[in-house]
Image (cartoon, rainbow, N blue to C red; front, side, top):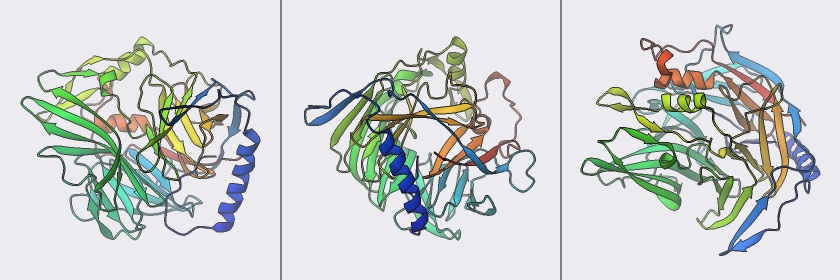
Length: 429
């Protein structure tokens, strides 16, 4: 039962207690169903090798629709390209529109309340924002990828300042953000720092713990590579690093990462930066069809001197092993892997692997709902809530010009996509 443990510091204790009681029964009942190899310790790090499946099989859960908004029939709510969705502890939802540069707020029963922020460079304003997080001071952080910045606003839409992750350490270069997450007062950020050279650029991907002012305290991971401006190419395997969904922050400060593209391997770091756990699972990566490889290549473009340039590409034969990581409030890790949305039974959108805090595979859960894993996206917003964004990927392709040969060159990127729709579900056992 996934959850998102961020939000204003108010909570309905009776509701939360009931949810965790159900969660405890659910997870305890599943414990011991997987037969993991005994954990071994290598260089002070615990390694757990798991089998491909649990003995009890996959549990299918039908998500219960509560409400929906947007779409062609909604005359009040219209979205452009949704970038992120988070919920607070009162079950209010905050939906970030990366195209319209605003956050739509919905009550637990789906009533639209108002919007927060707007497009611009002034206080409380953003440009092409990509994500949301509630910060330790109770403000809502809206982060934009480039130039990397976190804009803070109060929930009444009052600007509350901003900060740049890592501070001014680019040494004449520039920086971007992949994702920022905050939990139990800890802020963790993944991003890129670019330092120009003579006809080249050094790009360093990093994952780090930040102080409240954005200064870096602990660096968990980093990877640097040199980019030659004279070679318009994209080599997929060389560009892999933990992206916005390739890492997760747990309620106890642990940081979960998927640093290896082609292996089902999750490395877990303590809040002080020490690696303490490695989780692996038997896994056969999904082999792409030629059409799927062509689709990946078509979506790879670069902006050079204001022009969109298609790059020469080297695309891998297989999807990455890990697609996304999420840790619920009980410390259980939910993994969406490269096969989670493929070859599923009719009506099932996604299947997740669930690991306990010790790294053992204890459940495999399939969610039945109307979503299409290739085009739509499911967000976990509370212990018993999920939000489906229908048309998520097509809207983002249209916004960023990744539509391929059939893309409308004359499309107005400021015009919202009228068919983009959100559906709020209850996750019931």
